Length: 155
Ligand SMILES: [Cu+2]
Image (tube, rainbow, N blue to C red):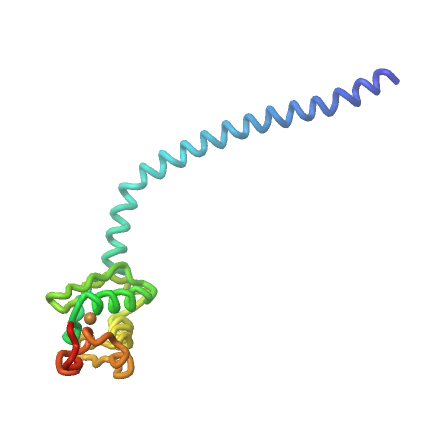
C-alpha cells in the first residue's frame, strides 16, 4: 500500500516535471524557429522588394484628372475626401492652383471612370465629365463658378 501511495504522488510530479521540461524545450525550439523565420524573412525581403515593385507596376497607376470648375481650398478638401472614399485609392493630392488631381490607385480595385464619377457626384467637373447639378447646387458659394456666386458674396 505504501509503495502504491508514493507512486500515486510521484506520478503527478513526474508528469508536471515532464510537461514543464517539454514546454521549456518547446519554447526554445519555437524561439529558434522564430529566429529562423526572421532571418529568412529579412533574407527574402530584398527579393520581395523587387517583386513588390514589379507587382506595383502591374497593379498600381498614377493619373491626373483636370478639375476645371474647382475654385478654392474647400474644393480641394471636398474632392479629396470624396475620392478617398473609393476603395483602392492609394493617395490623392489636389493642386488648387493647377486645378488638377494627382491620384495613385490600384488598377485591380478601381478605375478612372469610378474616380471621375465620385468627383462629379461631389459637384465638380472631372476631365470632360460634368458635375452633378444637384451636388453642385449644394456647394459653398465660394466653390461655385464665379458666374454662379452671389453678387453680395464677400469671398
Ligand atoms: Cu471651393
